[in-house]
Length: 104
Image 1 (spheres, rainbow, N blue to C red):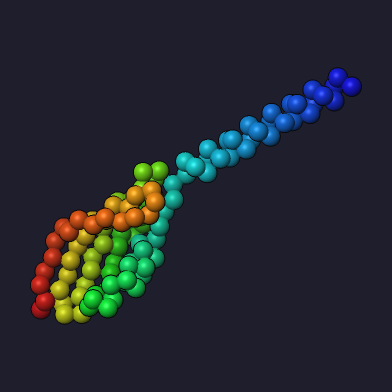
Image 2: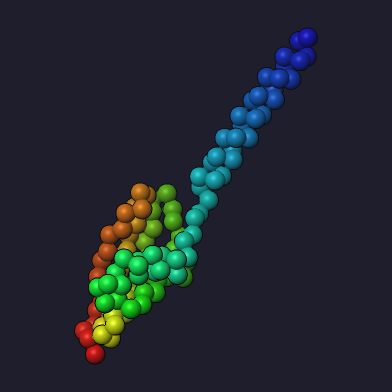
C-alpha cells in the first residue's frame, strides 16, 4: 500500500515538472514572421492610398518584447518610403520613417 502512494506521488511530480518544462520551452522559443506575410497584410490596408508594393525584412523575429523590422513601400506614382516598425507584445505597430522619395 505504501508503495502505490509513493509511485502516484512521484508520477504526479514528474508530470507537473514535465508540463512546466514544456511551457518554459514553448514560451522562450523564438517566433519568426515571414516578411512577405507581413507585407501582404500591410498592403491590404494601404492599397487604396496608392501603394502598389511593400517588401519587408525576409524574417521578422518576435521576442517576448515584440519585434523590430523594416519595410519598403513603393507607390503607384513611383514614390518610395522606407519605414522601421516596432511591434509590441500585443501586436500594435508604430512606424518611424527612415527615408522617402517623391513621385517620378
